[in-house]
Image (cartoon, rainbow, N blue to C red; front, side, top):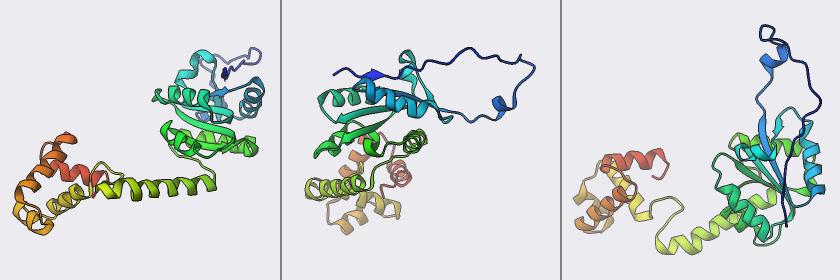
Length: 236
């Protein structure tokens, strides 16, 4: 499968005022979201490009400039191996966020979407002009977009991972284990090593080792730094 990138051909030449005569439009026009469109066939590509090129919120990029797009929009019938390869390639470009417009969202596609860093999903049957523009602008603002049923599946998936994989190992979705978070919370409340050992039923040696491991793994200077880091990132 060969993906086609968006190619924007500007219209005819326009006359521009001289540098001393700025227009009102140039002073007030909002910044547009730069978009690169990747589609698995020319028909899909043309349809999405035609929807977006008439909207002032978006700027469609030519092939040579696709890597600087704020948003990469991938349009496919289904999430297959060539699509996954493209999504992984786009994921390596940290300057762009990737949205997926897909015809059939099959079982297992949700996990693939998460692993490929997809920020937003829209079903092709619902991809009218307004929804496409909303998808693009939301991603440019750092937001995610999912159909309601997929959002429910995502939350169920996260809950299942926590319950079946992490909980039995004393882990959480954060960068701290439950034990590490508990000990840092006690440090933040002013307890010293012996008091933390008493409250958690661990030896003082274990408490010291756990806190040292946290500081080393997260490259923190000391306990105070570790507590500050955990609080800033909502880990305790």
